[in-house]
Amino acid sequence: MTKIHYFLFASIAILSLFAPCCLSAQVDTLGTEEEEDFSMYDNLDFADGGTKRYCTSKVLDLSPAKLISLSYDFQGPYTLQSDSVGSTLAGDAKIQNSHGIRFGFNVPVYSRNSLIVQAGLSYAEQQYSVNSDLPLANWIANQGLRTTSGMITVFKPINEKHFFIAQAQAEMSGNYSLTEWQPLNTLLYSGVAIWGWKKHDRRMFGIGLTRSYRAGNLNYIPAILLNWTSLNRKWGAEVLAPARAHIRRTFSPRHMLFFGYELEGSSYRLANTPEVSSPFSSHELRRSEVRIRGVYEQSIKGFIWISVQAGLRYNYEFNTDELPNNQEFFRGFFGEQPYAMQNEIGHTFYAMVGIHLVSP
Amino acid sequence: MTMKQSFLFSLLTTAVMLSLSLTSIAQDGDRILGVWEPSNGKARVKIEKIGTRYYGKIVWLKEPNDVETNLPKVDKNNPDASLRNVPLKGYRLLKDFTFKSGDEWDSGSIYDPENGNAYNCVIKMTDANTLDIRGYIGIEAFGRTDVWKRLEVPKK
Image (tube, rainbow over all chains, first blue to last red; front, side):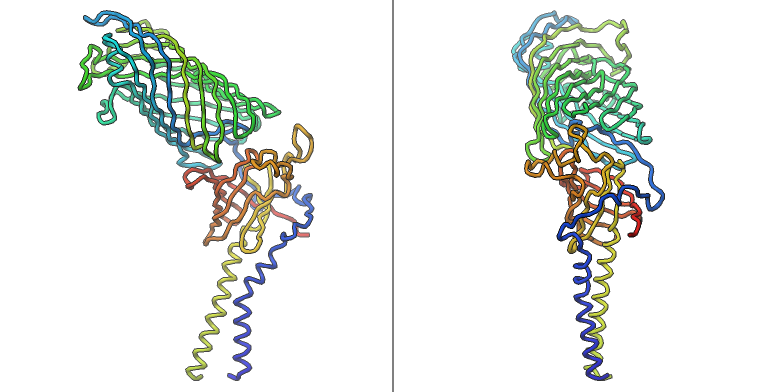
């Protein structure tokens, strides 16, 4: 090879080293933000014939779903009127306050246009501050009550207008400690299935059926879903009845105010503890309350939100059933099986503050 | 050919092959260029390349005007008040993506003008006409995937 050939090879090699940079520089046509004719994008076809469209699981301005939540709940003073049981006499006790932390974790394990599956865990406890000889008051003050639950939620859009939601949940409610759990045959199973319609981006509606312990006893109740946002996007409604319903005032996508209620409750297994032996050791406490409230939620930084709520905790039920060998029975709203204890607790104010990581 | 000639020839061959492979990688990354439509059909996004990174801007809106003002939609939910009058048509909602390898573009972000939030984002090309756009916060597990389809743009 001659020197000319070497020179040519070297030149080609050097040019080819820099060529990608030069070519990529030529690809850049937007550095000067020249005017573009957007009308050319009006009537376009899909390159491969298109794709099936699905409705989303949200409406505009819906409050963000909470991936991780940590809250503290506080209730003011109220009276407990305990029924007699066995040789234990009836009586009253003054509960100074009740309080507890709540933790929730709910993440999408599969999230695409055609299917969303979420899995979650939650924990809520209620500690009672009471100084009384009344056995029931003394007993719940000793260990408190707690609920630990796991759940799976599926949102399946059928097309642009129809969808199906299902949720299944298993929870353990009682006076157990986190180091000594209840038997697994005390697990409570609940769920909901809803068939829905999404008319447009501001309204979705559904009807279905729920199996729930929120009223204390096991019940099968119709479920109604409504998520709605007004045309001016300042107002909305978020309803999953009978569990909860709220009217929403949207100040911006990052802060909003709600008024409404939530029905909370479960069926708590009462068991002896190392400290306290009680006449209730085979009893199941049917606890249910309605929280009529105002809630304020705001983003404090990006996807970190805080929430503050306050209102009236209205007691619905605090009776007990005796369940030998943990054998549950169905009473519903209309059953006439007598309670082992018919107790009353007073209504009181409550407040809750929380911090949350919300979902995109 | 002498040893010195052989060495030079090998060096030049390696340089040429390297430059060809870099060009090939760049062209692989350019497969994402074009106009795409998100699954909700409410907008069309043109993905372009600026320097070595990829960006996507809105070029069409199904509902181009605000229902309250009847004027072209602007970025009214932007956390930065100074940006709330920027028109959405022409707005770059995909930013700073780099071609990783294979069928993935990452290290970018996606902006949602409906709520003013920006998310980390990764794009995966499942086939020549389909993109999985996954926006997430922190880790990919905390995110959602939307499927975008390619649109045919008539040549001028």
